Length: 196
Image (cartoon, rainbow, N blue to C red; front, side):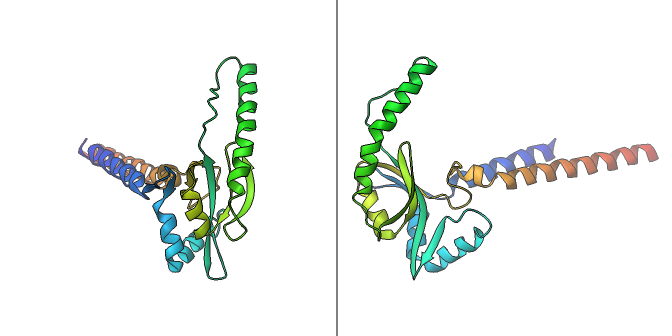
């Protein structure tokens, strides 16, 4: 029983540690962005270490010349007033209307960026993604049309950027180790009982 309580506290501690990771900052224009993105731009060694850790995954940053570029997803603020409700057919129509509403807003924001700011990879229904330079990030965090700038430090950009999801394998590994150790202890106890 005591071992189970300790195990639960360890898991809760790990979950709390995972959630506390990188801090989300909010600019004066109300744009959310990752505090570690600033570290990556300011510290070439930090950027190189992140590149090394991501060598087998989707690259979330690049160093072009001596300049750090981050692979980010930009989501824009939804001021369309369109709520997705109703039947399946009605919702589908409203989703198309919302995408049509976003398209000129996306183009407007992209029009403020040069090749030195961002290398666009593609558009999404409510934003776009690609490699961004520090000056591009600085432009976007001042743009009131931008909602958030997501920089996934590991894994593909389509995956939720939650620290919990990024570190799920550690949690699963700890849980598996716990059950293996408990199984070995139970086997040892049963062996002792049989000897008596």
